Image: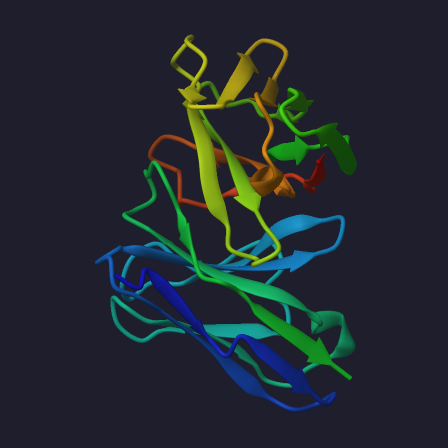
Length: 113
Length: 117
């Protein structure tokens, strides 16, 4: 049982380049989330999808777009990467908004130079 | 808006001793959930323990226990008999309850714990 799988695990981008972070979960969860982790700031929510077919902005959505492709997959796109987007990105999923545990992927370390 | 504060950026403890990590939060909600997550060097986020605000009894999971003080909005994590494998960053997190909840976790800044042999 893989849980939440993120790809890639590491990525280096040049300023202005675009890329998509992929996330898939095999737990039949309804809700999925994208967080970024920066030193001294904990994890902050970028976007979330409470259920298939819906997406909403979180705390720090600027510079990102998301797609809930189906129930399993939730991708995060950087259209024009900036150095301020250097961070570790985590995808997570949960049964629904009312949950006892969120499950996290192993993270993607992204560096924008 | 809810906020979560962890005022101890770094802590250390000797193996087999007990350590307490602090967390305070601010909310006007009456029903909510609180979590402690562990992040070892592998970066994997692992749920350590969970507390429902409507439960007065403090949650316990083996060597991990919490001291939940609802009126003081305090949620500390106690690790007993510390082991080298407990070395990690620990995050306190808050989740709203109720019909307006969207499942969004609000995290504290994290506390890096080092267990020394």
